[in-house]
Length: 309
Image 1: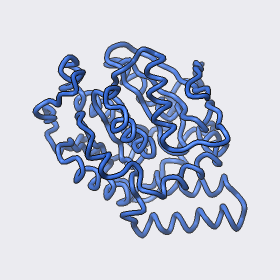
Image 2 (image 1 turned 180 degrees about the horizontal axis):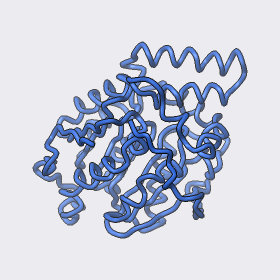
Image 3 (image 1 turned 45 degrees about the vertical axis):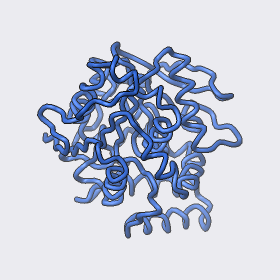
Image 4 (image 1 turned 90 degrees about the horizontal axis):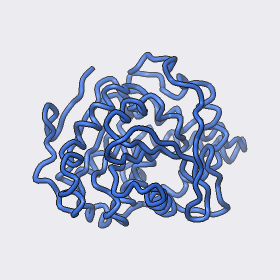
């Protein structure tokens, strides 16, 4: 795992707002090249991409945004998981950034799968960083224990922030002990706790299998699945589930990383994203037609590969 204290992360940046689908989304972009959309996980926010933004911006036009209900993007009274995919499409269209490479992390991976299945013309390649998809269909002992502890904080102690923090510590935990959440800058953690209500709401929505197996199987664009070797087994089981539905997907393992992959190992993460998407971004004309490259084997990585420190 990373021992970084995030001292190299810049201070809070100025974000831009745009109105899409009846909600104002806060976003920022940097770099030039093929568009790349970063979709954060449940309870996260744009600031958590800070360790990799500059690295990715050397190869892409990077767009990172706060999903509705999180951080600087307000929460409407009602919203569903499908609203997030529609928001992403509308954001890409408003910025003239379609089609794009779409990177979805954790709960954002669920949104990214929905986006690629529902709006395939907007996605030229899909990178899934331990998507928390269909977790209830393949529960683990640790995920069930977390759910019980979180529910106790939520319903018995009436403490939504503590309920959300229970999930954050579990999700970011390392198999070797400890977790990434407690090592984040205080401002990042405070923001994650401030929108605890949205976190719990999304956790509830993810209790149903979404998107369906059939819709996931319908995805035709190149797909890469990135996982951390120190992550909780729950996420590795979910990765294997996606790989069974999308057998042509490319799998990449990051050494020394847990579920907060891009924070634990930012340089490995950037290298993995650039290499995994190079076959597509170097032939945008082919990818734009919806045709799939013959192989996603990445030079130096392979179809099932490990990026080491």
